[in-house]
Length: 430
Image 1: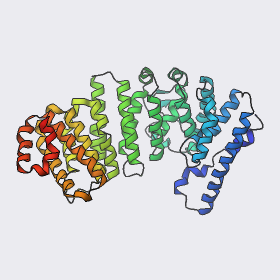
Image 2: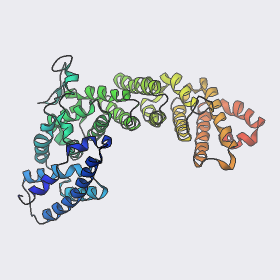
Image 3: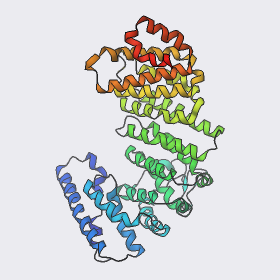
Image 4: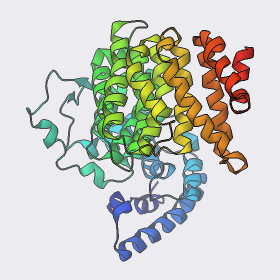
């Protein structure tokens, strides 16, 4: 493959792309933009050369994948057209053999992370250690000399390997996959931690649960994912929450027995410590972060079931607060819509406990409804959807607490049917 080697070398991504979003020097930006355009042309040439080859050795295949896989991702060094080219070149390797994945991980990924081994892992086996290697300061030392960050595209190659790794291959490749994944997940920079969460999400879809438990990685993953909820006031915080919540819930459901105390306790940690105790407490003025956490609330509530009732004292006031017009409430319509949808899920899931909360919930719904109706023909397009969501909460409340139909709903319709008719009549008829 000597004819393609020069092209592959031209695809080595400049380390300056590591700081692309924060670069202000115009000459560096121009140089990187020019390199990105040239990479598009190089990939086109490489694709044409590969079409002429009947077969490649395993080493040659590994070289092609290592050079091209980073352009299939979302890195700042790639363009939409470049991504399409990369996908076409990689198409023949959609079902790689274990040996090819092993060579990529051992020869291309592992060397990049070797200088900063994860302190809680045996890098030879991928098993957790009883205590941090290197002593109490090992975690801080782990952040020194992160040479892997100077190799943009290495994370994309790791991601490619994981997405193309079948369940039966994990046992053999475990010691090559887990150390770099945990290094990503435990990084102090939110952008890299987010990449780590995405990698974990990919692994959870295929990894055998028994392997996670036998190696102790299930507990290490859970602890690291939980820490994601403490990375607040960062540009990536909302996206990190949207990725970390379903990943953590999926991990718990995969690695704990149904109806077990361990499953219940871990789900409670996600909701109680992660969402309520961290995001809602320390990011209260970050609307995007709050919206992300509320959008994902139904994910935890569905998994936790009636156990969610333990947190109603925190959940109901938080969701209702976002609905009530007040000077201190700056929630936009989208956040209020998210709150209504979460509220409906909570009411249905915790129906046996809703009698205590029906008054507070109904008060919030009514106040938001009046504001929506008063907007009249000038209402925001989202408001129609918001009204439907408010009706959904009232319907759910009528099923959970049937007494509201003859008492609260009947009284409201008697006082002002024109105002509350379209909100409550469906529930009353039901």
